[in-house]
Amino acid sequence: MSPELPQRHTVRSDKALYDYVMELKGTHLRNAGQINRVAFDSRLHITRNALGMHTSKSQVHGAKLKAKREIHVATIFKDMPLEFLRMIVVHELSHVKESEHNKAFYKLCCNMEPDYHQLEFNLRAYLTYLETAGKPLWSPAQHGSSNN
Image 1 (tube, rainbow, N blue to C red):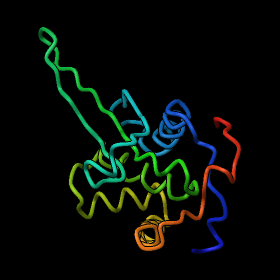
Image 2: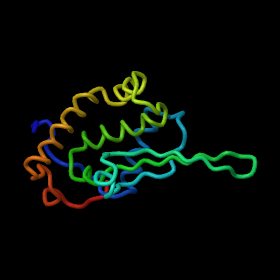
Image 3: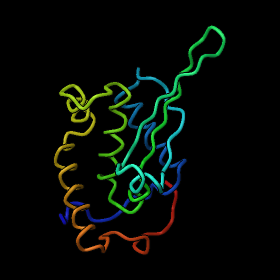
Image 4: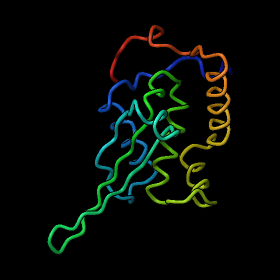
């Protein structure tokens, strides 16, 4: 893999992931709806063949309609470089404004992360490498367990 992605990040907990997502949202999507929950999900990659997932649930409370939005990120991203985590978070945040994978969606992704397409390509190449070689380039032993 590229030497440009030298080490894994320090976003290790759901709270740290929530803070990271909210920082990106505050920078790029201030007027978008509230995100109620952000979490790493160990079942995501296996059960849904997805790396990230966004959900939006609407509930009626009397005369009010309340929407709850959640973002789940596959746990595999704990052991990857920050750039890969950022790419998947940008992807899921873009779904807050654009539900479909259309031109406006990818324009929003590129607005939040100018190297979005290259990072997505690098991530797909790395995931293919993992499927064939099976040995992660970034492992938990490489880094302490700080919660940034």
